[in-house]
Each structure stands twice: as structure tokens, then as C-alpha cells.
Image 1 (spheres, rainbow, N blue to C red):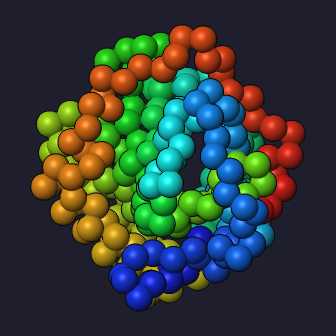
Image 2: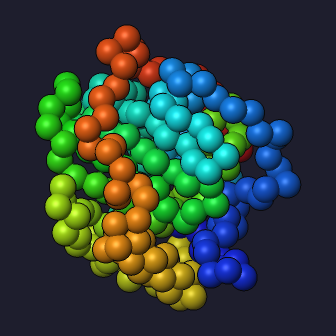
Amino acid sequence: MPTAEEAPDGSLKHAAGAGHAADQPPSAKWRAGDVIPVRHVWRGTVWYAHAATVVEDTPGRLVLHEPAGALRQWSHFDFESGRITPPREQRRHSTDALIIMETGAGHAVSLFWREGGGPFLCWYIDIQTPFRRAGGGVATWDLALDIVAGADLRWRLKDEDHLARMPALGWISEEGAAEVRREGERVIARLERRGAPFNEDWPKWRADSNWPVPPLPENWATPC
């Protein structure tokens, strides 16, 4: 996993190897219902990829839907040995997800429902590099630390042990890991003061019943 760099304003920058703003094509606004790939790229390789349906695309944020049954390519990172397996095909199961990615933010906020239009389950925040538009979709990279919050917004940290192990494996620097924790603290502060999107009605949102399960493009493994 890459080093998380800190921008002058204290936010996460794009990680080394994940690409730079100068590499981006001109921004193009997607329409609701468009299907795009989401690639997690590190050191020139796509380690995770999935397709998602666009819900909202504004200058401030991109909102995506990934239903149960959607095809994914997923690698396994062993945080003990440092071994990484190549991506393997699988399908999302058990939950439907809505993913909210704010422009320039070092995290993504997801909402999970029980699959098939079931009840709202929780908020799930991934600390990750800011997303960028590339390769007909978006690219980012997950930085291990997660935050899980129930419907009442009571939260807990997840995978702190993975983040603590990463510097020894050479997957992140000590300062990079410290910045990941600071980003987590910023998200928690927003969550506790009920800032957006935690004060919005997303838990009541439901996907358009006419949307099919989004297909993953054949070029999902092309780095961008």
C-alpha cells in the first residue's frame, strides 16, 4: 500500500504511484444511471476493481451505487506475511452499497443495506486516497483504516491493526500512517457534529428499480 502524503491543508494527497491531477483527462459530468469502473491502483497495478452505477455527479462529490451481485476483482493482502494474491473474480453479496466520494477528500462514505432492498444497516467509511477521474471511471487506493457507524451514528474504528502493521511491511511510511489516522479523526469529528453527509436522508434512499447490475468492463485491469 502506498505512502499517504499530506497536503498543505492537512488533507490526504494522491499516493505515490496512484497518479496525479495533471494526468487527468478533462472532467466530464456523468449522468444518473451511467455505469463506470472503480479501480484501486497501487504501484502501477490494479489490485481491486468493481463497477458502479452513477447516482449523482456534481463538482463537490460523486455518488455511486454497487448492488449485491455486482462483479468484482479482489486481491487478498496478508498483513502478517506481506503476501499479496493477484485479483480474483467474485461478486458482491449480502449488502447493497451507496458510495459517496467528495472531491479532494481522503475518504469515501458508504451506506449499506441488506441486499435486495432490505433495511439500512450502517455507515462505513474507508480512508483512501482522493478519487480522480481516469480510464472511463475513477481511481483511488484504500489505506486500511475504516470507521463503522450504526444508524444512530455511534462509531467504532476498524482494522487499526492492519494500519499499524503497514509501515513494517513497507506499504506506507510512519508519517503516512499518522496522516491516515488524522484523516480518520477529521471524519469522526464531522460524524459527531452531524455534518454532511451524515445529516442527509441517504439511509432512506433506494436505487432505481430499472437499473441492471452494473457490468465490469473487460479493461478493468488497465492501470490509470
